[in-house]
Image 1 (cartoon, rainbow, N blue to C red):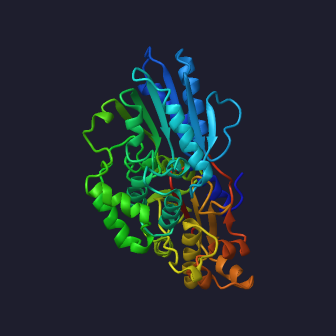
Image 2 (image 1 turned 135 degrees about the horizontal axis):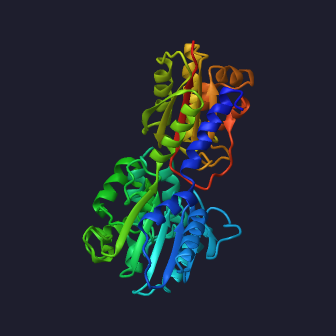
Image 3 (image 1 turned 90 degrees about the vertical axis):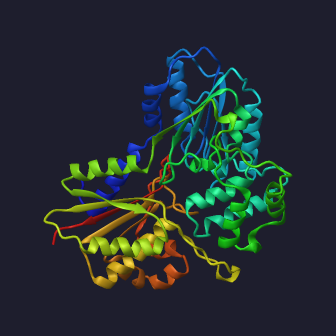
Length: 435
């Protein structure tokens, strides 16, 4: 039985995550579109949901009498019992030695794929970092630094991926080149708002629509020349001059035998949340897409909730991914937090200013982790700011310093459901009580 607004919001969040549970999503997709083929089958899973997706795929294939010849699952943690293919752990969100080793293990496995085989590639959020390894002529340390800078650049995920996949060994269609001409079926849990294959996991099996000159322009405009490492600069120059090839483009024969299916996304989670909210007796609506600066979104969402008047509890749902721009100067190093915590603290400040006590808001990543912290996000209301101040902190200063974690922790507002094993971006769930 739900006894508090916080419990209600947590239940709605759990329903959203359950709607995109990777194993069930995988099984549903396979049941509809997979036919039986006589060729050898390989299963390759990469991302935060790798283990669950791979387990479901292997079980389904076994039911068809097509137990996989082999495979590899690259995720953020050990696969656990029941997985019949090799399990490898990579680094996330910043690539390191584990990601480099995972990329090498993937390369070694791909050598076993023959042209008459069939490959099921299962993608989910986090794939970009988990197998990040530099292309030839690019230094590993410069690739890692680029990933780090991009995370705090304020760029949306599409432009982030357009840049980082240019320099990553298995991104931008290069994995398709390694597998071709084998029949390849890609099944993806989308972690981008457009469900665009070229952006999911940095598009390892999709044509890259961006030219090297465009990548350079994004980096110059958004990051500045100081953040284009020497090897990155030389690599772009070599591609621009024709000394090195461009990334695979639309129409390339390597994509002829590749099919692509989105099996779940943020919209799936939102629908699961909506159904759960309504079953609890609430009016439920979808408020729109989360995009742009997290702080501004927090204020805008709180204002929108402020305007709602209803004779019964009203839940409004948002899904997507905001951005946070971290200070460029090393002397202004930010504190701990993530985009959901930043959004929640901004919303709490607005509710404190207006004195509204009818609103409670949960902002959290569907993967159970927000930034480099152990929290998925936070649950705030009109009293959160007062609690922070009584703990001796200034919430406005904390927001400006990107130190939302410590401020929210002082108010016992952090939300820590644990890793969920999936990722379809973020959710914001706002509850307005009658009054």
